[in-house]
Length: 129
Image (cartoon, rainbow, N blue to C red; front, side, top):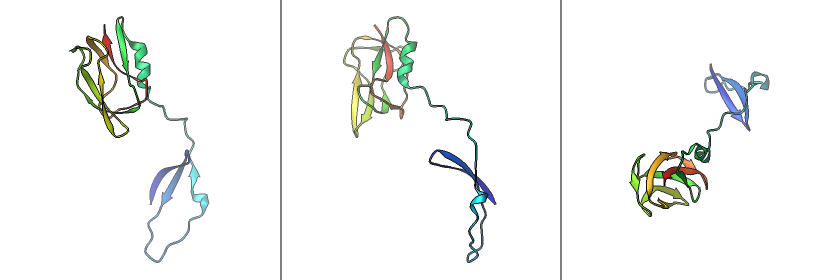
């Protein structure tokens, strides 16, 4: 017999499954399925935009212009960048969008990594002025 936890419409159930021989299938009563109490909602990861609150003096966040998935990061912390230089690539609506530096500066913090999903306005990285 195998035991599983199954979630249906947000409710967790503990079920036991027994393998039966072919032709000997039966129906188990609903009494054998018992709901399992949940401790509460699963913690959600903090959105990238909350990272903007941790900016140091002189740092400015570079926000995501639209929601999508981070494909590639072309810079690392401490890199000196020029206005218009490609910082990272964001896939949105099946198109790759290059996110460029809004001004000259130095990369301070990088808040995302490849394959991260971001929303419009989320902080991607910071640039010091």
